[in-house]
Amino acid sequence: MIIQIENINKWYDRFQVLHDINLQIESGELMALLGPSGCGKTSLLRIIAGLEKPDSGTIRFQGQDMKGYDVRNRKVGFVFQHYALFRHMTVLDNVAFGLRMKPRKIRLSENTILEKARYLLEMVQLDKIGNRYPDELSGGQRQRVALARALAVEPKVLLLDEPFGALDAKVRRELRRWLAKLHEEIHLTSIFVTHDQEEAMEVCDRIVIMNKGIIEQIGSPAEIYNHPRNEFVYNFLGDSNSLSVGGKTVNFRPYEVSVSFETKKGYTEAVVLDVRPMGAVTRAILQPIGNDYTIEAHIPNMTLGLKTLNKGQKVYFRPILDFEI
Amino acid sequence: MKAASPIIKPYYFLIALAWVVFALVLICPLLVVVIEAFSQGIKVFWQACIEPEALSAIKLTLLATIIALIMNVIFGVMAAWCVSKYEFIGKTLLVTLIDLPFSISPIVVGLIYTLLYGSQSIFYNFLIEHHLQVIYAIPGILLVTIFVTLPFVARSLIALMQEQGTQEEEAARLLGANGWQIFWHVTLPNIKWALLHGSVMSTARAMGEFGAVSVVSGHIQGLTNTLPLHIEMLYNEYNMVAAFSISVLLLLMAMLVLVLRKWCEKHLERHPQQKESA
Image 1 (cartoon, rainbow over the protein chains, first blue to last red):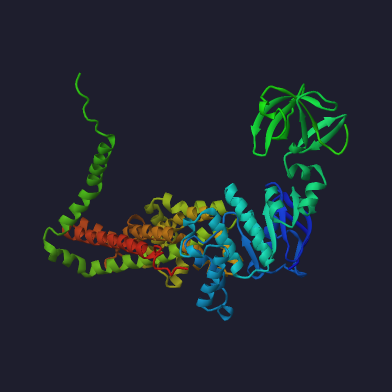
Image 2 (image 1 turned 180 degrees about the vertical axis):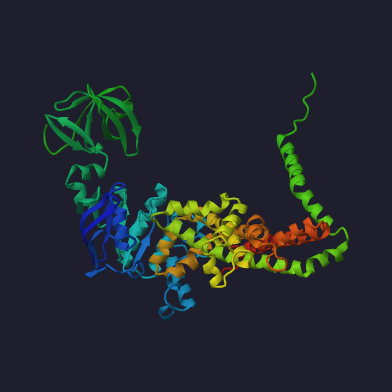
């Protein structure tokens, strides 16, 4: 289902959280709304779901204006950051809830409902723990239950509000890969809100970068990473350094630094403030002589002389850029 | 040097102290009441309980308690729902007003109601025209009982519901549940313990209420006497055995409420083993 977002404005008291948002989500696509906290991404998601009303603008599902459609009738699946599972119901009852709430005329038989709920639990690999209660599950399990519960009512759209935000790093990585795979299988139009650029990059087909209530850039992960439209997008997508060279400020990533132990043409002299092994690279914090800002450099472990690199040592560096300085 | 004496852990002392205070303040008075009530045998006790004035007092106390309980549950749940799930103008004022009955002396409540609905009141003629006797009649007793017990249910629910937030309700709505279904299947199960607790408190207070009821009741035997008022009357007549007998009766009713609460807790608990496994 195509979702069109047209000229959405939203105010909280005198604070405008969304400025004239225009966006189209294609059918079957998994799109990320990425931005720092307070950028309006969650408000936009809640407006799409119908949990909040925009002050102006239109949300269209498949061309149809959703104004006046209650949350209940929008056929939207929603996954909350803090799961929002029904704490007094078993996992199975949680998943079956939406099916049981349907009007009697269109409600399935109890057996069919249970069968369907069990099938969904199998899909999220939790069929063994259907009779447990939410507080007996790990965070990752809870979120999978929440997803199964949202999918049970066969929504036309799936909205995920920082779904992995409350989980630890390892479970998070596992779950987002699993989610990307699941999306490939079911191809449900989905919007994924996150503040974690790595997550958005890894899971989504298209990314919308938001900041202070406006859209900064829309594009595929590769597009926005390789061609950031402005400094905000560039900085938001990863750690960055900035250095003033010849009156011009250049931005570069920590891995775009060349380090030398002897002076070379175009290299800047710096003192090493800190050295940390980070796996494939070593992270060094460099302070150019006579300046108070620092440069973060990720130096490949194969670099000669790296093993003896120490704090306080003098080195030379230059950004690796497409142009000569 | 002397060998170190065994250290008496301070908590033994604390536990002993707790028991002493507990015995002095709670157990001894209760024992005295029971012993006095049965001092002239069980027959005299029973006689005191089944004389017509006592029976009418029991009925009136039960009536007031049950009506107050129903009102408190309905009003308390609605108020807590409004306060915790919605933002509106005057919310702080409403929350403060809910607590008012806690801070006003019951005797003052009685006086206020007497002034408001009694013969000095500007409503009095209107009430008489419509044959509504409030003061020195049962409606007055019901009104003040509701007033003094009003905060119990609302209070125990508001804090809990504010803490629980609205996400489960939102989730239920997104899954297609209507307002009634959300309340019945999501909100109510989440607040059942607090609701039970508030109801028990409200019931206990309603049964025992003396001050406010005393002012508005008029002490008409067999008509507007509740159990506590009946006890006071017997006591003032130096009918100690009967006074203590009715006290034991009131005590038993309070115990019954506590037993009922336990029973509810047992039956509302989750039974995972009885659930069919997935």
